[in-house]
Length: 104
Ligand code: HEC
Ligand code: HEC
Image (cartoon, rainbow, N blue to C red; front, side, top):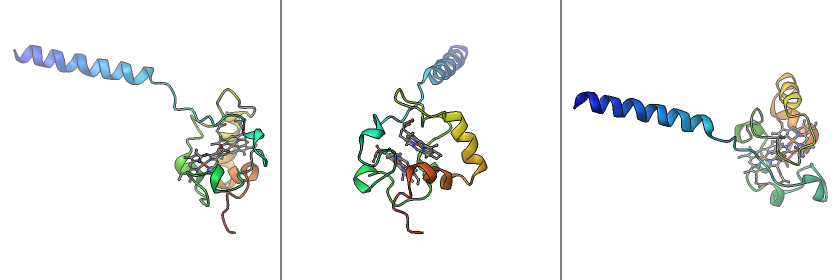
């Protein structure tokens, strides 16, 4: 009996492990950003309900895995990750996406 329970437990671990590996990345995709009036610049709270007026982009956006990798992406995601690490983290995001309403 104990043996069966242990066997069951071990197989559940393998099952969960393999499910974990199959999981897709949680890609961020908001369609074609260039279709909004100011393009990729965040132009107000309505365009950025989740994070307007915040400077800590990396808290919410998992750039290493999920950003700049959608079907409509035109930029080199890995190059942006590299440059972000070299250029002050979230501050570098603002060089393309604007100040996000953050007061200097
Ligand atoms: C508190 C979490 C949070 C923070 C901090 C945050 N964001 Fe966001 N961001 C979101 C969420 C949620 C969305 C998707 C929904 C939306 O557009 O409101 C989003 C959407 C976006 C979009 C797509 C907007 C569009 O036009 O559809 C861009 C670009 C973006 N964020 C960049 C940034 C940058 C750059 C920073 C830092 C200056 C930042 N975010 C900080 C949560 C956050
Ligand atoms: C070199 C300019 C550039 C930099 C730097 C940059 N982005 Fe972007 N970003 C873009 C462009 C262009 C798009 C439009 C879609 C695309 O190409 O991925 C975009 C799209 C996005 C989106 C919408 C979802 C998506 O994946 O398309 C989010 C969220 C976002 N950027 C967050 C960030 C964050 C956070 C940083 C800082 C680590 C950052 N960006 C740095 C140019 C940039």
